[in-house]
Amino acid sequence: MALRLRPRESEFYDLFTRQAEQLVLGARLLTEAVGATDRTEVARRMRDAEHAADETTHQVIRQVNTTFVTPFDREDIYALASRLDDIMDFMEEAVDLLVLYEIDRLPPGVQEQVDVLQQCATLTADAMPRLRTMTDLSEYWIEVNRLENTADRSYRRILATLFGGGYDALEVLKAKDVVDSLEAAADAFESVANIVEQIAVKES
Image 1 (cartoon, one colour):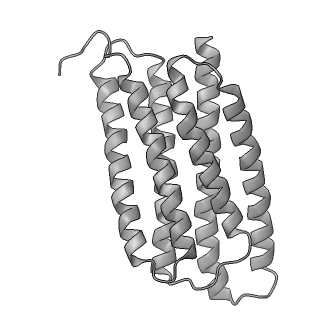
Image 2: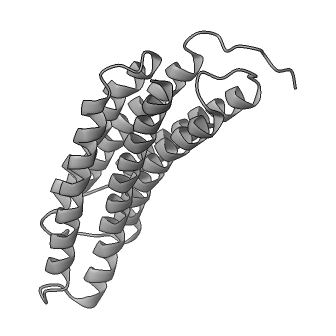
Protein backbone atom coordinates (compact mmCIF):
# COMPACT_ATOMS: atom_id res chain seq x y z
CA MET A 1 0.00 0.00 0.00
CA ALA A 2 1.58 3.27 -1.11
CA LEU A 3 1.88 6.08 1.42
CA ARG A 4 1.51 9.72 0.40
CA LEU A 5 3.74 12.14 2.28
CA ARG A 6 1.04 14.78 2.66
CA PRO A 7 -2.73 14.67 2.28
CA ARG A 8 -4.34 16.81 -0.34
CA GLU A 9 -5.49 19.96 1.41
CA SER A 10 -8.93 19.50 2.99
CA GLU A 11 -9.28 15.70 2.56
CA PHE A 12 -9.63 14.87 6.25
CA TYR A 13 -11.62 18.01 6.98
CA ASP A 14 -14.04 17.27 4.16
CA LEU A 15 -14.61 13.76 5.47
CA PHE A 16 -15.22 14.92 9.04
CA THR A 17 -17.63 17.53 7.71
CA ARG A 18 -19.44 14.85 5.72
CA GLN A 19 -19.68 12.64 8.81
CA ALA A 20 -21.23 15.49 10.78
CA GLU A 21 -23.68 16.35 8.00
CA GLN A 22 -24.77 12.71 7.97
CA LEU A 23 -25.53 13.08 11.68
CA VAL A 24 -27.84 15.99 10.90
CA LEU A 25 -29.75 13.69 8.54
CA GLY A 26 -29.76 10.93 11.16
CA ALA A 27 -31.17 13.25 13.82
CA ARG A 28 -33.87 14.42 11.41
CA LEU A 29 -34.87 10.83 10.63
CA LEU A 30 -34.86 10.01 14.33
CA THR A 31 -37.26 12.88 14.97
CA GLU A 32 -39.48 11.64 12.16
CA ALA A 33 -39.48 8.11 13.57
CA VAL A 34 -40.42 9.22 17.08
CA GLY A 35 -43.48 11.05 15.77
CA ALA A 36 -44.56 8.45 13.20
CA THR A 37 -47.27 5.85 13.53
CA ASP A 38 -45.86 3.62 10.76
CA ARG A 39 -42.08 3.68 11.16
CA THR A 40 -41.12 1.05 8.58
CA GLU A 41 -40.15 3.44 5.80
CA VAL A 42 -38.26 5.88 8.00
CA ALA A 43 -36.38 2.95 9.54
CA ARG A 44 -35.31 1.86 6.06
CA ARG A 45 -34.03 5.36 5.30
CA MET A 46 -32.26 5.43 8.64
CA ARG A 47 -30.49 2.16 7.83
CA ASP A 48 -29.39 3.61 4.48
CA ALA A 49 -28.09 6.72 6.25
CA GLU A 50 -26.20 4.59 8.76
CA HIS A 51 -24.59 2.55 5.98
CA ALA A 52 -23.51 5.76 4.22
CA ALA A 53 -22.05 7.04 7.48
CA ASP A 54 -20.13 3.77 7.91
CA GLU A 55 -18.62 4.19 4.47
CA THR A 56 -17.47 7.72 5.29
CA THR A 57 -15.85 6.43 8.48
CA HIS A 58 -14.04 3.75 6.48
CA GLN A 59 -12.81 6.45 4.11
CA VAL A 60 -11.29 8.34 7.03
CA ILE A 61 -9.53 5.20 8.24
CA ARG A 62 -8.23 4.42 4.76
CA GLN A 63 -7.02 8.00 4.47
CA VAL A 64 -5.08 7.71 7.73
CA ASN A 65 -3.55 4.42 6.70
CA THR A 66 -2.33 5.75 3.35
CA THR A 67 -1.07 9.15 4.50
CA PHE A 68 2.34 9.61 6.10
CA VAL A 69 1.82 13.15 7.40
CA THR A 70 -1.65 13.78 8.83
CA PRO A 71 -3.08 17.21 9.74
CA PHE A 72 -3.14 16.28 13.44
CA ASP A 73 -2.37 13.25 15.60
CA ARG A 74 -3.47 9.92 14.15
CA GLU A 75 -4.98 8.75 17.42
CA ASP A 76 -7.15 11.87 17.48
CA ILE A 77 -8.27 11.27 13.90
CA TYR A 78 -9.21 7.69 14.73
CA ALA A 79 -11.00 8.76 17.91
CA LEU A 80 -12.94 11.55 16.22
CA ALA A 81 -14.03 9.40 13.28
CA SER A 82 -15.00 6.54 15.57
CA ARG A 83 -17.11 8.65 17.94
CA LEU A 84 -18.88 10.42 15.07
CA ASP A 85 -19.73 6.97 13.72
CA ASP A 86 -20.93 5.82 17.15
CA ILE A 87 -23.47 8.64 17.28
CA MET A 88 -25.11 7.50 14.05
CA ASP A 89 -25.08 3.90 15.30
CA PHE A 90 -26.89 4.86 18.51
CA MET A 91 -29.52 6.90 16.66
CA GLU A 92 -30.11 4.09 14.17
CA GLU A 93 -30.37 1.66 17.08
CA ALA A 94 -33.09 3.79 18.69
CA VAL A 95 -35.11 3.85 15.47
CA ASP A 96 -34.66 0.13 14.95
CA LEU A 97 -35.86 -0.59 18.50
CA LEU A 98 -38.94 1.57 17.97
CA VAL A 99 -39.85 -0.65 15.01
CA LEU A 100 -38.86 -4.00 16.50
CA TYR A 101 -40.64 -3.37 19.79
CA GLU A 102 -43.67 -1.82 18.06
CA ILE A 103 -43.72 0.94 20.65
CA ASP A 104 -46.92 2.97 20.62
CA ARG A 105 -46.40 5.05 23.75
CA LEU A 106 -43.19 6.82 24.68
CA PRO A 107 -42.79 8.62 28.01
CA PRO A 108 -42.73 12.42 28.22
CA GLY A 109 -39.19 13.67 27.84
CA VAL A 110 -38.19 11.56 24.85
CA GLN A 111 -38.89 14.45 22.52
CA GLU A 112 -36.58 16.63 24.62
CA GLN A 113 -33.85 14.01 24.26
CA VAL A 114 -34.34 13.99 20.50
CA ASP A 115 -34.36 17.81 20.33
CA VAL A 116 -31.02 17.85 22.16
CA LEU A 117 -29.57 15.41 19.63
CA GLN A 118 -30.77 17.58 16.77
CA GLN A 119 -29.12 20.63 18.30
CA CYS A 120 -25.89 18.74 18.93
CA ALA A 121 -25.86 17.47 15.34
CA THR A 122 -26.29 20.98 13.95
CA LEU A 123 -23.56 22.37 16.20
CA THR A 124 -21.20 19.55 15.25
CA ALA A 125 -21.84 20.05 11.53
CA ASP A 126 -21.11 23.76 11.94
CA ALA A 127 -17.92 23.06 13.90
CA MET A 128 -16.24 20.41 11.74
CA PRO A 129 -15.20 22.77 8.89
CA ARG A 130 -13.50 25.00 11.48
CA LEU A 131 -11.03 22.21 12.27
CA ARG A 132 -9.04 23.53 9.32
CA THR A 133 -8.14 26.71 11.18
CA MET A 134 -8.89 25.66 14.79
CA THR A 135 -10.75 28.93 15.28
CA ASP A 136 -14.03 29.74 17.04
CA LEU A 137 -14.43 26.22 18.41
CA SER A 138 -14.67 26.85 22.15
CA GLU A 139 -18.32 27.92 21.98
CA TYR A 140 -19.07 24.65 20.22
CA TRP A 141 -17.71 22.33 22.90
CA ILE A 142 -19.08 24.46 25.73
CA GLU A 143 -22.59 24.38 24.23
CA VAL A 144 -22.48 20.65 23.49
CA ASN A 145 -21.41 19.98 27.07
CA ARG A 146 -24.32 22.10 28.29
CA LEU A 147 -26.75 20.24 26.04
CA GLU A 148 -25.44 16.88 27.23
CA ASN A 149 -26.14 17.95 30.81
CA THR A 150 -29.69 18.79 29.69
CA ALA A 151 -29.96 15.32 28.13
CA ASP A 152 -28.76 13.74 31.38
CA ARG A 153 -31.45 15.53 33.39
CA SER A 154 -34.09 14.55 30.86
CA TYR A 155 -32.90 10.93 30.98
CA ARG A 156 -33.23 10.81 34.76
CA ARG A 157 -36.74 12.29 34.62
CA ILE A 158 -37.78 9.75 31.99
CA LEU A 159 -36.54 6.89 34.15
CA ALA A 160 -38.43 8.28 37.13
CA THR A 161 -41.59 8.39 35.00
CA LEU A 162 -41.08 4.87 33.66
CA PHE A 163 -40.60 3.43 37.12
CA GLY A 164 -43.35 5.51 38.66
CA GLY A 165 -46.06 2.90 38.21
CA GLY A 166 -47.87 4.29 35.17
CA TYR A 167 -46.39 1.78 32.75
CA ASP A 168 -46.52 -1.98 32.75
CA ALA A 169 -43.29 -3.93 33.05
CA LEU A 170 -42.97 -4.73 29.34
CA GLU A 171 -43.53 -1.10 28.35
CA VAL A 172 -40.84 -0.06 30.81
CA LEU A 173 -38.30 -2.50 29.39
CA LYS A 174 -38.99 -1.50 25.79
CA ALA A 175 -38.98 2.25 26.39
CA LYS A 176 -35.86 2.09 28.55
CA ASP A 177 -33.89 0.43 25.75
CA VAL A 178 -34.83 3.31 23.43
CA VAL A 179 -34.02 6.08 25.88
CA ASP A 180 -30.73 4.33 26.75
CA SER A 181 -29.77 4.52 23.08
CA LEU A 182 -30.68 8.20 22.96
CA GLU A 183 -28.65 8.87 26.10
CA ALA A 184 -25.68 7.03 24.59
CA ALA A 185 -25.92 9.25 21.49
CA ALA A 186 -25.88 12.38 23.65
CA ASP A 187 -22.84 11.05 25.55
CA ALA A 188 -21.08 10.37 22.24
CA PHE A 189 -21.75 13.93 21.06
CA GLU A 190 -20.05 15.16 24.22
CA SER A 191 -17.12 12.83 23.56
CA VAL A 192 -16.76 14.31 20.07
CA ALA A 193 -16.75 17.82 21.54
CA ASN A 194 -14.11 16.77 24.07
CA ILE A 195 -11.94 15.29 21.32
CA VAL A 196 -12.22 18.50 19.32
CA GLU A 197 -11.19 20.49 22.40
CA GLN A 198 -8.22 18.18 22.89
CA ILE A 199 -7.16 18.60 19.27
CA ALA A 200 -7.51 22.38 19.47
CA VAL A 201 -5.36 22.54 22.62
CA LYS A 202 -2.65 20.40 21.03
CA GLU A 203 -2.64 22.48 17.86
CA SER A 204 -2.67 25.88 19.57
